[in-house]
Image 1 (cartoon, rainbow, N blue to C red):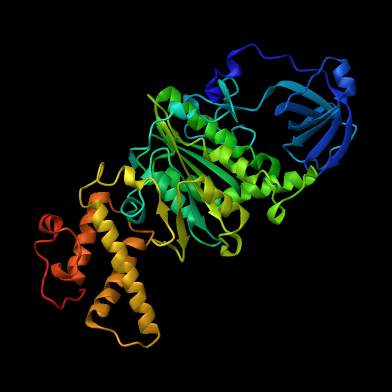
Image 2: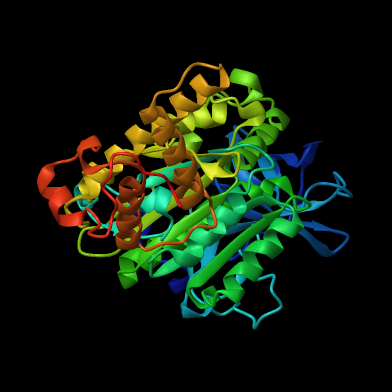
Length: 467
């Protein structure tokens, strides 16, 4: 597995090259450097190699090689190019970007260059691992077969989150997707949580940090954060930093790691901005033609490692204008294994889908899970149809009135994001709601399951109403 080679930090570092002048263009956060003189000094820049930009005898910013074109090299400057002169010097460092990896990173917060920003103890001497390596060979993966419980009924009951799954939350601006993501990070039965914040406003960042602290889970959490006010270039590094650390935890320590990323549309927008600065030919709606590959490189890091731990990726993808055909959610849908669709403050059971849930339902969960899940969704769909009939002033049957009551109770008891129930309690609550709204003969479920799980105290008279 190329991505799991020993960390370069354990080897003698390559001496940094001499600094030289050669900046020929500054476009956005990208600088073009003529390296003819550098080559005569024996300097041979490599793709993704780090460089230090120095100005007036002081360090200005780290940069990374993003394009090699003959004697011209393009670098993306992490701190931005505002105030940078073309007389500045470039010093190639002879190494790639690496992430700090040790037991000391738990509870810490890092920026898009991998540096701690929480005023905690220095981690300068801690070992580091390379980022952005290749994905794991399929022969080293095992088939997804373990459930990650979140205590959120709309996930655990209706669309299970499975270890090694890669799945987004599709939503729009203004929805509480960050609050939902924080709840999942707190309640999920994972060994470690790695959070990647992309272009967050400070309030959202503070919400995540405060939520993890108040819930007492910060000690198992590592945070990589790029704020909206931070350089756009650093935004493109956050997923690679987070995933490199998560991969190490899974492989070397056997941990079940949950990676939370918000928002991948901000990541794609950062790639678009950099691509335009480098004069790449845009594709659909201004995004670069390699958008699919860029997203897939990150999502395919989700893996259940043979004989080790696992990496599960849950991300947020906002849809501008609630447009599912927007390039970012559209490409994401082809890569991931389902989606959670969040709108109107609820997880929509119709738009949500987990393509791996069949690997755990009925195998790691109760025997009634599959049938109760399908039955609840069927009656809720019929209840929504009854609501539409009522809105159009159609005459409703007695059974339609039962469906209306069921749909109303289903939303309040299961779809509200504040609801927290372990899976078994949620399944029992499903049976209880069916018993409140319908008689046993009206519920189409295997008789043996009704004999086992139908509430003994339920009123089975034909006409039933919710309390």
